[in-house]
Image (cartoon, rainbow, N blue to C red; front, top):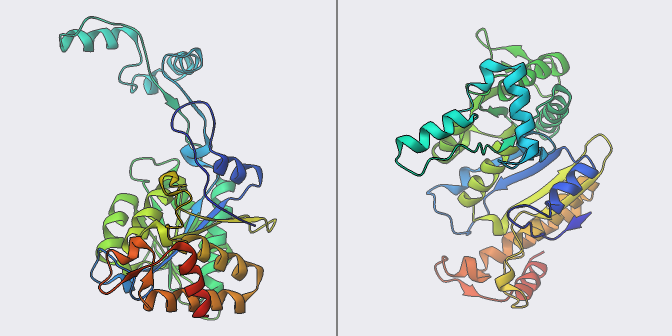
Length: 342
């Protein structure tokens, strides 16, 4: 199915309905293709070099929603458990005891306080959850004749979560796809004679990746990563090709076949009932849905129509204000323009 954006309030109370849908249907892949359409305004010199597909794990990591507010009985129970069972690890919590808190306030000359207030969040990363995401990403690369799969992680710091994700990625590439190590590894490549021959499986540290997708986008093709890294990367890349107003997304379970496609931007309530916003994200999400269903002809027509509409320079305000010779039209008029160019 396809849906529009939903608002998630900041703070406690109501949880994200988007996250709830993903967890209820176990939509473990957040699929974010990122490409540039000729004529779309971009802040970079060569946006046409950006052509990536992000496979973001969608159900685990810190987005699992397991967290407790500082100063509550729940967070204190966890602190007490760590202090008793894992004293060395507990000592790494900078202000986990009343003594440490009181010492800090005294040093800065503030009225002395000794109450402990530490928010606690858990980062679950399982082998099963990672393997299904990684297998889906490499399978996509094989089926779509892509050049490489990059495992993006922060394993240099989080060795047993992000680092494990990286290790499992190489393991899957070798055991399921027959990849062989390049020059002693860890990078590997699917050899000749096997499906996906020539595809390179490599890895990159998350913060370096955020730099390199900007300076060397041609080095990246399919990206497989955990939830938080994928969130950052998806929106950073969208900015290079025109912004989230034209960034589609799909949430998919490749095992059950369930999928929900959606615009990746928010609800933008200040533009409600103005017939003004860019419908590109929803349109391209529809294209993704049709392609996933096997309706390739319909999907191709949508791409043709959208590309033609943008090339005509009759576009919504967000593009028109940045496009030389652009003419601003309404959201509904842009939809008609897309249809005319199919």
